[in-house]
Amino acid sequence: MIEMCNPIIVEFPLRGTWLAPNTPGTKIPSHGTNKLGTRYAYDFIQVDWERNGLPAYKVGFSHYLFLGVPLEEYYCWGQEVYAPCNGIVVQAKDGYKERSRTNIFSDTLNAYKNAHYFDPEKDDEQLVAGNYIIIKYDDGVYAALCHLQNSSIQVSIGQNVKKGELIGRVGHSGNSYAPHLHFQLMDGEDIKTANGLPCAFEQYEIYQENGWKTISNGIPTDKDKIRFQQ
Image 1: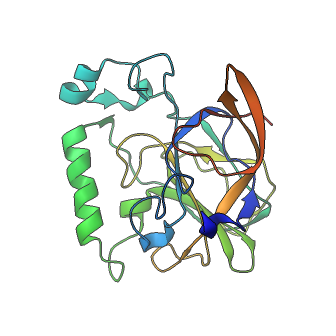
Image 2: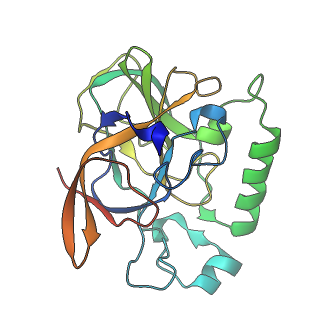
């Protein structure tokens, strides 16, 4: 993809093994829209690689469909999130309550409402971003990490952070179908008005041909089994 030829390079913001169901490595805009700085955004989840359908939860599909799933039954809920770059925290919004369990019907309705009726002129960005952190990496380059676990944010506005520093935990706040980390780079600190910027990860591994292969300055696709251990 020509748009991704000169991406900004940052560190992978998670540890362990992950899947990116939404990624600019597969389609652009990765989330189907350019709004809210999401053109080149990533979503990351953890799944059971041995089960059909690669579920992100420990219960069966019928339980998920009819009863919903408590957040603690998701593999990635509560996993640690790390700063992808050195920088200054310019926004850190916590305290947005998470729904205690997922529900495919209410979560879909919530997503539809936010997609079609969210008004950046008057609505709070936490309706879509949930609990989030924005780090100024460079002039005109800001990293946003969204949908964090309630009360998990470890940093505050004005704080200098180092790449690889623990900053929060994966959650299910805001416009979220299920616990996951939403990550994007933007050209401004205001999610409502910023444009997305292409980014790649300086190093991670993908599982290929029964073994792990190191990738440098890579952009994962939605099929890649991604692993990063600092």
